[in-house]
Amino acid sequence: MDQSTSRKRPWLAAGLGLLVTGLGQLYLRRWKRALGWAVFAVLVGAFLVPESTLANPASADLVDGAPLLVVGVLSVVDAYLIARRHNVRLAVAQESRCPSCYRELDADVAFCPWCGSEVQSTAAADGSARTDLDTSPDDRF
Image 1 (cartoon, rainbow, N blue to C red):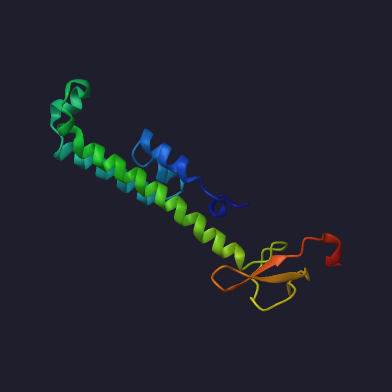
Image 2: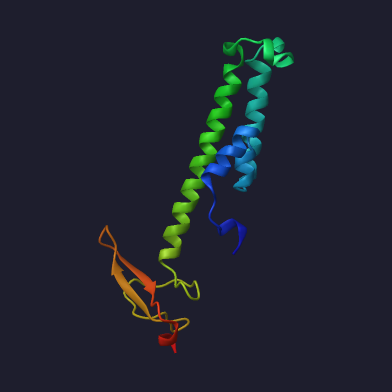
């Protein structure tokens, strides 16, 4: 399956974002967004954090490093939410496709017009129709 259409792990994106600001976005292949977070972290560090805090973070006050901490946490939350949103969009897109050939299906068909696989329409919880491939592979032919 193509890397850009595979499911993403939100916890992994968040964990990578904890290591380095923007790394979670790189895992999600959001290049410009990752660059934006990295540049934003550098700018916040340059303009809002005292130079003594950057030189020796162990002896610095927590309040002095708070702006960088806030940027890092926001980047982690952003990476987590992007991964979750990606997975939801992927699930919705797969529901309207044939599980056998992955081509788009109409909601009211009993078989895939592309590959001939039988599909059954089941009512989802919200009342919309969803198509599933018949479980028996011998019945397809």
